[in-house]
Amino acid sequence: MKTIQGKILFVVISALVVITLIVTSISVTITHEIMHKDADRILNNVAQKEVAQIDDMLNDFVKSVAIMEHYVSHELISSGSLSDQEYLAEYTEKIRHLFDEVAYNTSGASSYYLCFSPELTGITSGFYCQYMEDGSVYELSKDDFSKLSLITDEELVEYSNAKSPIGGSWVEPHPSRFTKEMVVSYVLPVYSKDDFVGILGFNMDFDYLLDRVNSISVYENGCALLIGEDMETCYNTSKKTEIYGEYTKATQALVNGMNLELRAGYKDIQSGIRPMLTHIVIAFLVVLVLSIIYTFWVTSRIVKPLKELTKAAGNISSGIQEVEFIIDSKDEVGILSRVLNDTYGKIREYSEYINALAFRDSLTGIKNSTAYTEAIEQLNKEINLGNPSFGVIVADINNLKKTNDTYGHDVGNELIIHSAKILTDTFKTSAIFRIGGDEFAVVLKGRDFENYRTLIEKMDAAFSADYIEVGDKRVDVSIARGVALFDSSIDHVYTDVFLKADHAMYMHKKEMKAQMA
Image 1 (spheres, helix red, strand yellow):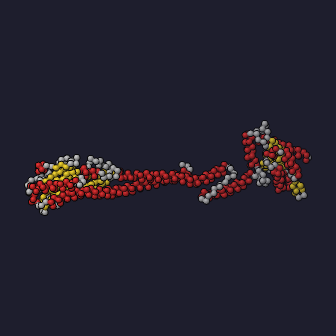
Image 2: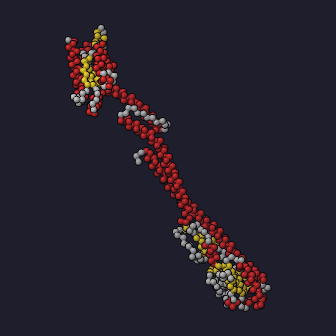
Image 3: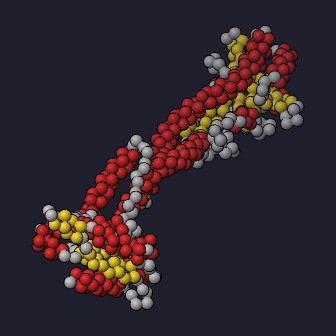
């Protein structure tokens, strides 16, 4: 991750991941607490609602028993009339038919009975009716009924409890005498004025009650339990009631003394968190992708000008002369670009100034010996690479020492300047060097190389016509020159060509001296 763009992307993605993990952790923790509190509240609300509905059903059962108690007590002439066996038989038959009507319209009723007090009737008297599986009603015979004992028969409850004037009582689930199915009973004592007459009761099919409890839905895997008064006995264990792991519960009492308990596992409760986590992850991925795209776009706008600046700096270090920093922005990168552009301009000006000092002759303005050395290296490279076309003119100013000694160095310098000017005016496409105090070298190239003979004649004519006036004296501007062309068959380096030109120059100087003698 060496690029700025990569580092920025790494920082953004890392920050998003950390923020998402923190937000997700906080959200999950808070959601857990809220959902657990909501679960307790929901369970209690559901338990209250279901208990109210079951109590309504049980209260309907109680009302049916109360209605029959009203009939039994009000249809009875007196408690003493029950000692009359004929009246007892007629009265029992009449009441039984009323029981039939009420029990038929009582939901869940599986059997019903009426038992008179033996203290009034002299014998165990009454009736016991049971709904059979085919819907018919089976009535216990008088002989069988007479064998029932009020004191010991659990199916009818203890005599002492039933005789209590407090009111009716619910009997915990117990097996029916005829079908062996479990029933739950509501028993009510009957009084005529203040005299105890007997007991009556309805038995409810316990499966009817259990089915109602089992139909309660609690989350996806929760359960509803019917618990006994002892808070330990569970009556619907045949249904799946085991909750794996930790769970919460809500318990509400029923009017019959039992309890309804709702249970829900925390895993079940927290299952609602999964969609939320899924939404958070999806949202995170969407935000992450959009953030990466946006960050990539932003960093590209930042990095692109930086790359341009880097490229420009590389061009400068490579020696490329024409380099521009063109970044039109008002931010820090734009400011940096403008500063670098100004700095580079000043560097170029300074560099040109330095080059002028390093490669230009201060007197004549033409290239000096340092530039000549670099030119020789370049020509040698061209010779090694192929067959270049060039020539060399070596020129030497005549009588420079004599002029300096006679008229002074100022006049000698004028002689040098005049000589350099004639050379530069003559040779337009060639490099001209001052390689010594009175010596020049011209590297012929291009049109100058092609027309060197004509140009040398032009140069000779210019030197013949030029002079310097010193008072009433006249100092001629004169040079000796020699020329040589590169010949690949005999020349291997630049020096080979230079020596030929230098030799020709000395021969020309010798001829000029001979002519003046």
